[in-house]
Length: 539
Image 1 (cartoon, rainbow, N blue to C red):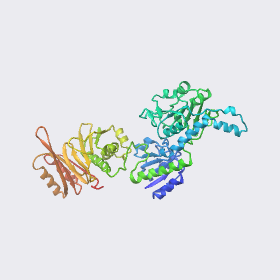
Image 2 (tube, rainbow, N blue to C red):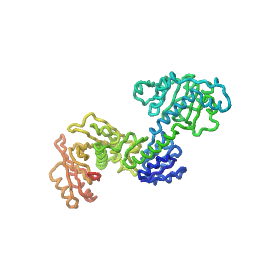
Image 3 (cartoon, helix red, strand yellow):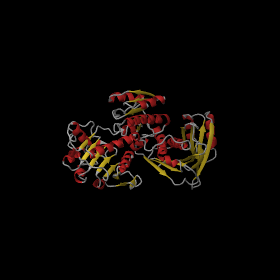
Image 4 (tube, rainbow, N blue to C red):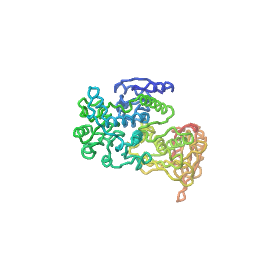
């Protein structure tokens, strides 16, 4: 295992890597081509905001499994490229929460009390106090856009300032936050009409680009509005903001982030008395810089060593480091996927996971991805894993469905995983399974056949007409080929017309060769022969 540190980290982060016994190289200042040439040799890449992990850098990632950003955002990492290559992207948003929130409050106070302009006035040898009369925050209404960790931290401190606080967040499910102290407003224009100060704590992207635009600045906002942007530059239309300040449509703006950083020397916000500008300092404290460096290193090592996922940006709620009583369900999902991959023909149109029970339902998304990886792996030349499997399936028009059932299927009890695959031709196969107290995964049903077996090792699945002599024929064929049958489970499915088919599930000590499988397929009454290899029983 080896990690590439491509940006400057706090010394404490590097110390953690050393103490963890992980090999790493520090290579700062690599150009795009140099970084692209370097990453294939490393399992992990740690960056800050300076290095850009572009699509070109990730085009041939080699053994790279994860990228950790020591910081909040991941706008310097091409998420689509990383996800398509199965590379986990992590960040350390929580580590700099306090510092970023404090900076937003500092901007708010500086703007309300005109501190930067007053400072420049005094050091310039002047003393005209009346020019710098400010406004107090107590009693004003603060609008917090984005009620995540930072937004809630800002809101808590603003309440201590005796401000009224309202929130806007389309993804916040409740009508209020912080025990009812922050009212949530669903419509952004209505939200904007009732606030004196607005502070942004949202990610970038199309959903939040120019959320505060010219129309809202000129025709919706109050004239006493103070704008604080400590999140992403694109959230506010900077040109419209400068015009609104010049024309006194709003009272002031404090900006820490810009669309282009550093901003152009002729940026329209420069030189405005009612603007406070800082060079992206939100997380720039000694404590935050140490914390994000250490947390990025810890998250990287945890994932590479144990599969634990911390601060994932593109993992979709996946959890791989399951406790001992839940881990067997992950094994079961993967092994069911492998069995169905060997048995199904004609590709997949839909892959459906149904889970019941207190343990399995908690990890439905993880279990579906693990199973789908094994279903797709035999059919793809490019690597597929839990990070990119949803992306790969979507590219191929495969629908992934996860359903939590209130109770297990008839005749079964406890935590049950059921996986069904359906092809474009209508062929459909399903496996149901569980994990007992011994921690071993078990398959309980295969289509309409009742079985009870541990899916492990070299296995052969034979479906046949249920008639005399077939079992003997199979046993003789294996004996003649010198392939020992270690275990066999047989199940029968009776049809409404009185006919019946049977399923033989065999565990064998060595792989049956092509000659044996072809011989079996040629025997009368044998309908299907499929072979697969699963991990060992205790693996």
